[in-house]
Length: 151
Image (cartoon, rainbow, N blue to C red):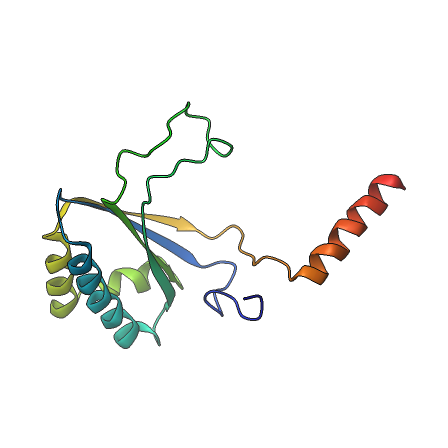
């Protein structure tokens, strides 16, 4: 669990693209995941050597963290089970945009978006990334904090 990063080799200045996909009511999630898998495999195959670092796809579970939110007391997100995020990491925006220019990519993307009510993609700049400490390092970090506070 602690040995390797989720996606190794993502530099600190990476561009992060998050595609918000809201699925149509009643869409079969297995079909969504099959189409997303073909799309992601295409990007890995044709763009791993020209700017693509990696990515992942996540599904909105409906859970809302009340401890991490300032928007009230919602207990379930309204897009539960209908929103997926396609999160990809890139060298720069130009590399990402180039990946979308092939006929095959556009066909695969169209097949995915046929299952969607809406989709939009936002570009972010990486500001921080990090993995959890292993148990021994976490213990030492807590001890160092306590020592600094006492001193």
